[in-house]
Amino acid sequence: MKQVQPFIKGFEMSMWRQAPDIETLMAAQKNTIGEVLDIRFESFTEDSMTASMVVDQRTHQPFGLLHGGASVVLAESLGSMASYLMVDPKTHFCVGLEVNANHLRGVRTGRVTGVVRPVHIGRTTHVWDIRISTDEGKLSCISRLTVAVVPHGQEPPAH
Image (tube, rainbow, N blue to C red):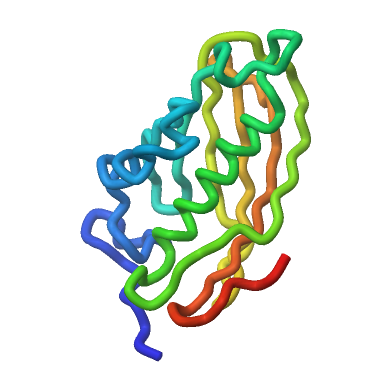
């Protein structure tokens, strides 16, 4: 199997195997739950990516707080896109295997911001840590996502 060059110009010490490009990630949100929930990819570092999501009637549960499922959508969106940037899309695709979340603080309005960082980057699985915070910087959710890295032509693992 041909090794993909892990370093890109401007990210020489980076883990990303594809150039992080916010416009491309935002275009991928078109006609998805990410677009409905106004998830916006915002920035990259050599080992993290940041996105935010609106907290309003689209993401509320019946009592006016951010729905835990919406936080999980933000977490899985971040981890899935991070995995996508870690593989060669001509040879592999990524699918979520497991996601969990601990909801630590209620949020009523504004935006929440998630930061994804790798826990494990293997040949067939990636594990991501996602921390979601309020506009005030207070931690509202901690999530972990496990992603399968699947060669094209192979079926994703059965759940």
